[in-house]
Image 1 (tube, rainbow, N blue to C red):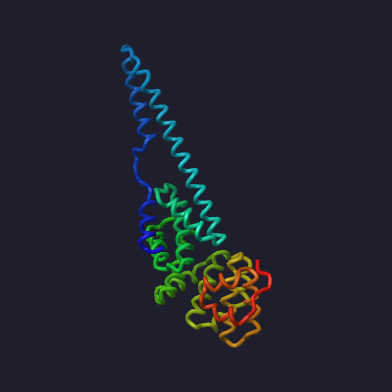
Image 2 (tube, helix red, strand yellow):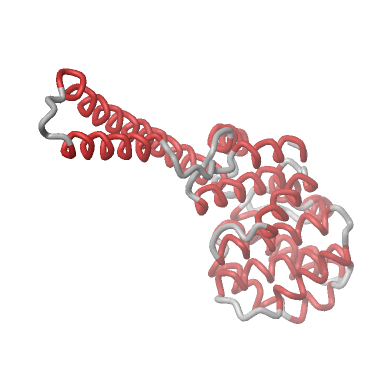
Length: 282
């Protein structure tokens, strides 16, 4: 996955802003025809005058049915993609999202959610430039809900860190950290801040709020809390506290296998070799 691929999907999924759609044209034509027939009641409409309104009605029904089927299929693809992303089944997620975004998606929230799914896939594939491109598109065009905008900002900051655009990443993370956020969103920002601290070697800051962060991750990130625990393990290990590092690594591997943790955060490679994983990961 690269920038060219996601750019193509962004373009192909843009809704067509056409006022004169099939049902609109058909209804307009039917209205004009009925109006003309009523305006001239003394003239017998004949077979053609009787048949044409029926054909227009059938056309409207067929067009509406086609749109309904198409929308139902789009909803199914989006649901499949969301479930696959949550389960980190990236191949299935990419297939569903590619099919969905290959044609126009009329509902803005659904399109934005699919684009965020595309970001998640790009990050999982380590295609961080592609992830940045999609995030910037969402933010520059003001797409989606407040929650979707927040998710795009968090994803963009993480991708900027991965491509060594440190200044931009730090500025964005600082802005997010200053916002008054509900706990669910605060947990995402704290995970991002922890990643920045471990990446940049500022582990002392991580230790000051370690317990608070661990609790926040546990309550609001589900299995993704494992990434937070893993990064806490790295922070404690670097400050010479192996027992606490072992504890957090154990908690991390209770939720996510070590290989997946390291794939998401290569910074955890040394930790995975130094400390034992949980014996029975989920």
